[in-house]
Image (cartoon, rainbow, N blue to C red; front, top):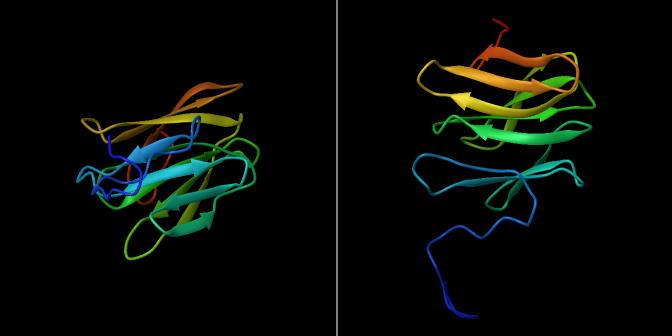
Length: 127
């Protein structure tokens, strides 16, 4: 912990209750602000859907955001800048998301359909 006015190499702390994901190198922290409907990485912010609820990062160049109101998972490229590159329709209000790195799968929990499994890549598809 640093005292007020002291500098630190660590990324700033996320707001309480905000879903976060950190890239493997530990230098970039993504923070989803559901009320504002934005994804934040450093000083970049982009709008992400109409009802974003969770975020997961692959540890390299991709992040995935669940949009419960929009029934979708959004694919966000992180470099060279934040950019939504794909919207994958996932019926049933996708709510939470996790990455199974060993199997290269996204595990998406929906409110009405249970767990949906997608490929964890730039073009996710249902399995």
